[in-house]
Image 1: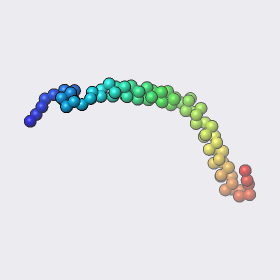
Image 2: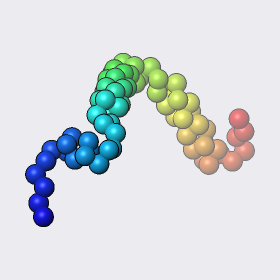
Image 3: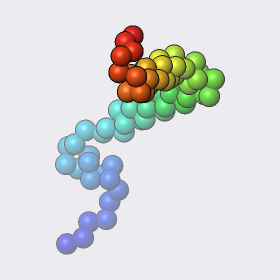
Length: 75
């Protein structure tokens, strides 16, 4: 048996709720969040956020390397 109907008609026939408004709301929310995250990913914002961490990591790497070369050196 074949039934020719749209998803909306089938949903109404079986008494299932219409979730399209909720789906549209969630899609709009996701789009807003993605747009906000993309703005945060601008190069100057990324550099400002990462630079202090990168400098500290580089200093730690230098200290570790120096301590391997000269075991008597302590920080």
